[in-house]
Length: 207
Image (cartoon, rainbow, N blue to C red; front, side, top):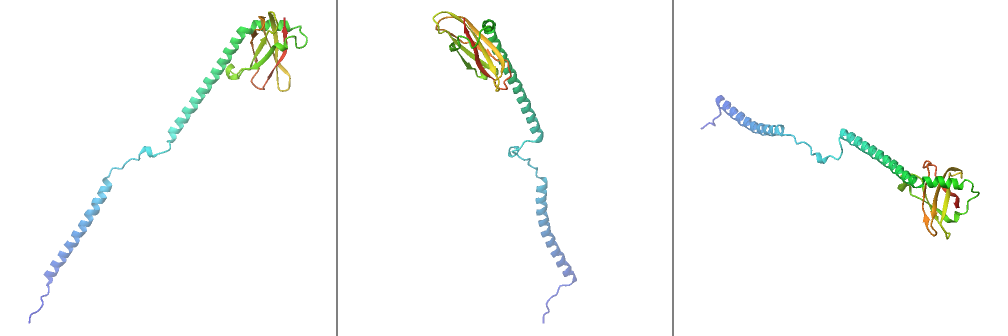
């Protein structure tokens, strides 16, 4: 009768070693795979964010931009103020050059005139936009010679405040105006823009 062979101690040790080798091989495959993955992740170069994805501005850039805007606005405001002042001076100078002597003559002629004078019907007034005068308050005085002969005119314009008080008086005139012709001297107020003043035809004398 045959007996089933049973492994001896040497055989058992051989089998155990073989199993251990197989298990280690599996572990090595697994470890190698994990190691490769870790190594790849560790060795990957980080990708910087795309600047175009940001919608804000770094604080330092914001401060710089704000400073530039303020400086630019201040420069424009200063330039605008200087420009307005220059236009006002030029406008006043051009008016003065044409009317200074006539104003002095008109004032002299009206000195002894009682009431409104004899030529108020020949005179009308139209205000000029401050944008055209550099911010100055100015009035065009239209004088029309409705007579049949040459005549000279003297006109007084009063500027009144909202209370009706005369705060400024200006004079214009035109000498030797031909029949049927008209002249349009300009009266310029030297008062501040505020409060609002109203120009009123105070006197008009034909002489």
